[in-house]
Amino acid sequence: MNNSSITPIERRHLRSKTSFRQSVRHSLTMAYRGLLKIRRTPEQLFDVTLQPIIFTLMFTYIFGGAISGDVLSYLPIIIPGILVQTVITTSIVTGVQLREDMDKGVFDRFKSLPIARIAPLAGALLADTIRYTIATVLTFSMGYVMGYRPEGGLGFVVLAALLVIVCSWAISWIFAFFGVIARTASSVQGISMIVLFPLTFLSNAFVPADTLPSWLQWFVKINPISHLVTAVRDLTNSGTAGWDLGISLIGAAVIVAIFAPITVRAYMRRT
Amino acid sequence: MKNVNGTKQKTASGEWAVEARGLVKNFGDNRAVDGVDLNVRAGTIYGVLGPNGAGKTTTIRMLATLLRADEGTTRIFGYDVAKDPNIVRQLIGVTGQYASVDESLSATENLIIFSRLLGLSRVESKRKAADLLEEFSLTEAAKRPLKNFSGGMRRRLDLAASLIAQPPLLFLDEPTTGLDPRTRNQMWDTIRRLVKTGSTVLLTTQYLQEADELADRIAVIDHGRVVAEGTVNELKASVGTSSLHLSIQNQQDIQHARQTVERVLQVQSAVSPEGAKITAPMADADLVTDLLIALREARIPLAELSVQKPTLDEVFLTITGHGAEENESTNSHKSEGVIA
Image (cartoon, rainbow over all chains, first blue to last red; front, side, top):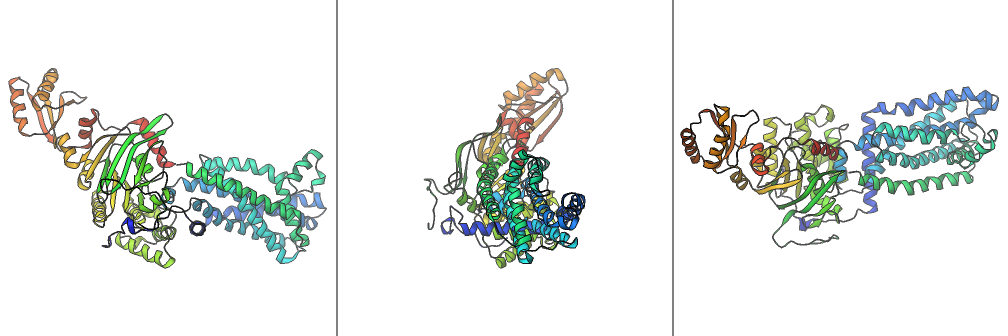
């Protein structure tokens, strides 16, 4: 114990609100914690390393011949599709891990510290972008190994990767919300899969939409996942940015605008 | 006072670290905390004493902004917990009975992250972490993952983490439960030193001895209510410094014997379920002489006689009229409070 006595309350600078800059700083510190945790337990990266490799191989060779005649001409369709599907599926883990994390005593300390209330959540979500990055890089690498040569060039591939990572980060707020309100980690996994499975498969990710019955086409065309897949295809295959890119980014912003506040509210109430 | 955005209200009678009025918390149908009042003077150690499930943890969580009270108000150094939680959080440190540190990280990493969150720079955080680890003799284990830490090491790290910002008020929830006697004594020394630097400590405990060793004032809490409050001496006086245990030879004399005990010692007594054993608080040892004479005159032969220092059980027996056994229904809700 040091002998210096504590600062009297009168001489402390007390703030009743955390500023935006402090909130960002707190969130970055929490993200640093997330990264440290990933480094300590690298086995939790299994899903993001194996899933892109297995899914890309599997889907390309199963559907390639049937849909596009041969594997090589299917690659420009499937790689953006599988990229979106894989990376967004990865974001479920964010909710599951958040649930597990929140059950631990350390979250009590976070709550008792004078930090921005959003920081523990934002930090966890931010750290998980490393997972999306790994999944993205591996999917493109797998595609490249199998013969995929995107016409848009490397610059647009990087842009497409960033787009997918940003959108997955936005979507992970939905799963974070499930994570905060659910009782157990496995129920988070369950609910999230039920939401995500139809969304990713009832899209243009694997097959062209015009091969589907008309009632299904209607859904596939309004499905935000379809817009994201199309935006990624535009960027990688032709180096163009169209309206789909705009819709994807607006959609991501809307999701964060809705789910970030209600998630933080639910997190604060769950005490 | 400068740079204060909150609504601070000075209290008339000196500096109070904690002023809680009529705190209530319900978990479903269960009233875990049922109108608790607490006043803790700055610079003192205050003990909240009670059995498992009495509502100690729930109370502390409400005082420390971790749990919203259903009813009642709390002021920490004059700041309202509900209105200015962020200011209150700058004035308190909380150490739970479960470790509120990150299991998957090392001790140093834990302290650095908490320091960074509290606004210290990278360099300051590193130095602070090293200093605290040194103070709490954890330097050797600093790099090891917490999974391999003993209970005592975990508690020490937990307390160290609460001291980063040198908060004027510390909440310690059962700081020594589950520790071996040596580690417990070290923890007591640490707490005493903390108060010497000007901190106020509010701690909960199940052990009267611990409250006795540390606390200036004690509140005894049972079924979510404060059933007694005072200095250690006041509390002990009400309990009797010791209790008298009498076993009689003939079971049929039990009622007569009990009446004699209560008449001569002028206290409430209890009969143990096994029968033939009477327990009564012994406020005045001299009266025992009278009691023995009275029992001889009544021709009630004794099998055994012993005197015991007060235990939490006796405190409870005297104050509440029932033992300090765990209450199942309240206990289940306590664990709920811990998890959430």
